[in-house]
Image (tube, rainbow, N blue to C red; front, side):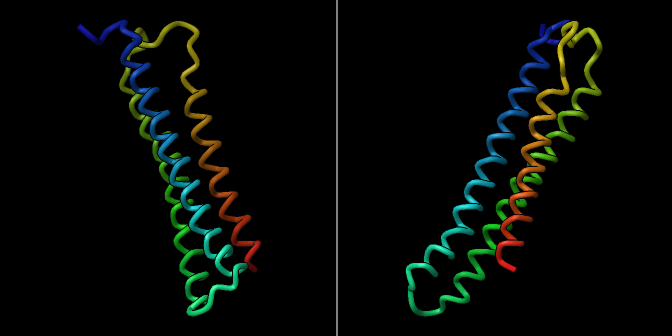
Length: 123
């Protein structure tokens, strides 16, 4: 029976947290590519609706980056909520449960900083 004193429950939750981490990073990377695509098209000098295309690319890219950052932060909150439901004996002695949450929080913060950098670069 999985449950009391079984660390597999905790480790499964951490694997889920890290899968959300990969999802958030992928969304942020996709957003960066979308945002830069408009700039690339502008540098190539593609004609026809260029201003609108650059604007849509920028807004869409920033949206994906912020969505990825939100996924990172929300996954930390969900994991913290789950950890509160575990009994003390379900966590191995001396195991740091905060490291994985810290990684996700830092990645989320970096996503927000990437948005700030991109927005300031446009102004």
